[in-house]
Amino acid sequence: MDRVHNLLLEIGTEEIPAGFIARALEDLARLAGERLVDSRLSFRDIITLGTPRRLTLVVRDMASRQPDQEEKLLGPPARIAFDEDGKPTKAALGFARTNGVSVEELVVRETEKGDYLAIERIVEGKDTLDILPDLLPGIIRSIPFAKAMRWDDKDIRFARPIRWLVALYGEKVVGFSLAGVSAGRHSRGHRFMSPGPVEVTSSLEGYRGALRDAHVIVDADARRARLLEQAVAAAQEAGGSLLDDEELVEINANLTEFPSAVCGSFDTGFLRLPKDVLVTCMREHQKYFAVVDKEGRLKANFVAINNTLSPKPELVRTGHERVLRARLSDAAFFFEEDTRRPLEAFVPELAGMVFHDRLGTLLDKTMRIRALATYLAAQVAPDLSEVLERAAWLCKADLLTEMVGEFPTLQGIMGREYAVLSGETNAVAIAIGEHYMPVRSGGELPTTLQGALLGIADKIDTICSMFAIGLRPSGTQDPFGLRRMALGIFHVMLEKGLSISMKSLIQ
Image (cartoon, helix red, strand yellow):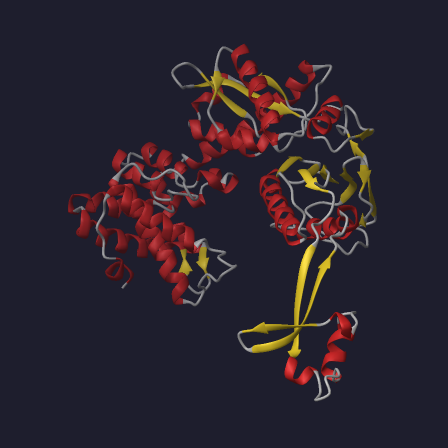
């Protein structure tokens, strides 16, 4: 039996955006599996690891060579391969010459179509170390990214410039170069705490351990666990707990190589702002976690995740507090400016905001949504007609507010908050807040019927409008998210048990 060894490939880069890493690792594993199978190189399993500065592939127990392969090649029919005297014709000679064998090595084999000339031989497998130098660069080049870049005069596109490469099969370096970088056996430690080269091995545990000693936790699960442990402890110091946010945990885990947490505070006066505004201010730009008390109410605290262990944590805390104070001050100003007038006062100004140059303004869209919402109410819930008509008229008004201009993810949410402050009913406010749901695949669905119907009206208007002017999604392009909207409509209908004729609605 052939000996087996691990393959380790590390692509060292400048900091890759957090949102790219998980998908890149999935693609790296997929591409490696496909290319290794195509190359007839057997292996036990594939593991990927990654941080902002590296994408790592570990293939465990990979064979040291390809298996020998029995090759059968069919040539010309036997009747034209030999003349009447049994001597080989040009057809036979050409077949032998093309495949590098002598005429004496040719055999005649019976097939369904008759007797044919054939070659039967054993092709010896190549050594793995002879295959990998061509295979690995192809894998690296093939990793797709939503946005890739070029640098210097290199002929490769990647998420960020490649600065080092590690390629080991067993203890041997796989020799190849890419983007002006030659593969070796030295990785890099943490940019600030251990910036020097780190010699690694192809052993999974040895690789993890060497980088851990250099302040790099290369395993995303281990990094996530450390991050949560640190963040929970920091929140407990302030007498609270973290507001659940799995997505923010994932983002911070992919922004750091050695996460550490610090708990800060802000002026309690900012707690007068809506909860969603405070959470968004902390989350969107700073990637801070909100802290809540036992009743789930926000405390005047936050938890920040750092990529280093600072010898002066108090200085770090003060820096985070200063940055957040500026963000919250801006949000307070936006809130005060927006609430100087009722939500309805923003609606006429939608006439100055273009939805699409061939589909009119957002006021035009608002009129269409109102007509569709009224139609849906008549079909499904006549008692909600007034609520839906009013909510439809107001549902896009918050797009003109200062708060949504600064924090677009608060669209709908601020409409709900401002509707309540403007004296609208809770039913209207909730419909406005829910009509964008679900905002992503698998996202939260509307809890109320009026929110569900208003959302359907908004989404079907966008879908039909875009189709009407020829902007249909293709196999690779869907810039307006029409597929997501269509799926959202059906998820809402199934969740609410709605029976609506889509043909009539579209018409």
